[in-house]
Image (cartoon, rainbow, N blue to C red; front, side, top):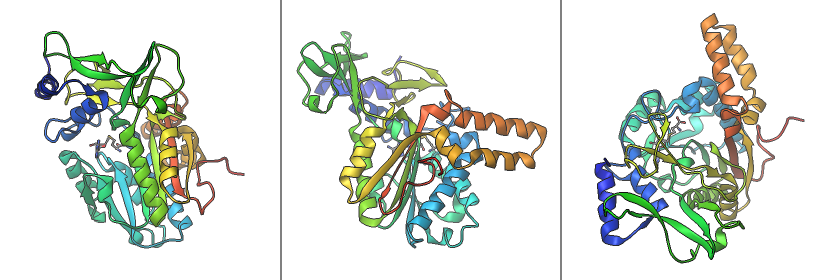
Amino acid sequence: MTTELGRRIARRIALGGPISVAEFMAEALGHPTLGYYRRAPILGAAGDFVTAPEISQMFGEILGAWLADRWQAMGRPGGVRLVELGPGRGTLLADALRATRGVAGFHAALELHLVEINQTLRDRQAASLAPYRPSWHERFDEIPAGPLLLVANEFFDALPVRQFHRAPHGWVERMVGLASDGETLSFALAPGITPFARLLPEASEGANAELCEAACGLAAAIGERVGADGGWALIVDYGRAASGPGASLQAVRDHRGVGFLERPGETDLSADVDFGALAKAACSAGHRVRAFGPVTQGDFLARLGIRQRADALKARASEQQRHAIDAALERLIAPGQMGTVFRVLAVGDDRSAAPAGFSDPT
Ligand code: SAH
């Protein structure tokens, strides 16, 4: 049994023909009333996934220290747009802002802007970030001009991707059409060679590839803004360091992998972030813009002192809390866990040297 949204997508295909995987993903996640990200709850034990800021306060605290350092490197401007893309429950920024209360002048220089399409999560964010009086936006383009400090954790993986398959005669696009019953959603390959072929990697027959137009478009908009008004962006997500062949789309419901076309609107769809493509898009769009990384989340957090932070928290914790802090630290930085699966990319105006976390201290 599919969903109401599944039936609507099938009707659209019956009338207009197959749609791209990206169009399917955009509809399944972002449909104004029935899309997955319009509904709640999606985060935490009751939802479909648990994110780093929900694992430990240390994650947001470390990112807060990074943001405050970048503000100082920018020359402590006023009127800084502190932007989070997809803030979830607002935990990351609440921890970041609490940890930076002592940085003279920092909070007074900030204006909080949250990009979020989920009304229930907007309400949660309003509760966790009330003292900072945030404003909300549907899209990054709506953020008023001015110096930028931006964070995005597990946001870019939710942006739609196109998928391609290397057929004997060349790259063809994988589409979403209908099975022979005329109702069930089903994958089909477009017959002709795709006009996107020149953007796809060299690969032998049978290979797959993905292109993230929406993610690259957003990275370009961020690069352009940073180039024009100054600032820094920090993007944290799972993904690959450089572009290359491969298919990464995944579908998760109730913490389990499920079919990609099953129950649209009730299933979390995501793809690995192509950090190489994001860095290229950001740098080519903005004047004097540079990208740093990606580095692994484990290296980034360790260089910024997460172990020392854990020790400080443990010094005033109960035995049980000390175990919880160690377990959270392990999950965030250990190889094979989030420590190597997740990567961190920074984009900024290149007047400054590599920011903290992107090279070993000398
Ligand atoms: N950053 C948070 C939440 C990650 S989940 C954390 O780390 O816990 C993804 C977040 O992005 C959710 O808040 C979701 O509602 C939001 N989101 C997803 N797609 C979006 C879109 N196209 N525009 C704006 N927000 C979106």
